[in-house]
Image 1 (cartoon, rainbow, N blue to C red):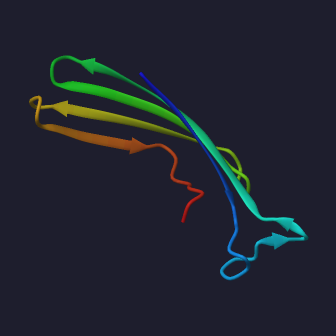
Image 2: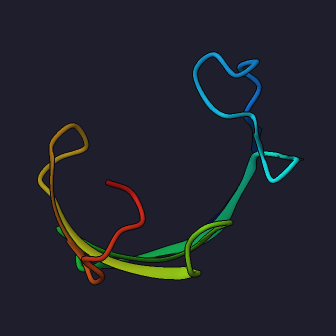
Length: 94
């Protein structure tokens, strides 16, 4: 099982040359954070089933959960084939 998290705070500081550094007299900033959990289970000698769930939240977007499922064919220790399905097609990123 794997578990992870990330956090990012960004404050625009271009002295007004590239971005507007303030809006309504306040400094412009963005906060992003998220986390995930992933588990895998072997099915026989040749397959591994993998599943994960991820949560993301950004200051300007609604919270989002994303689920993924994968099936891995274990040919040898050096060669594997992977098929992944992402359950959610919406994205906050363009």
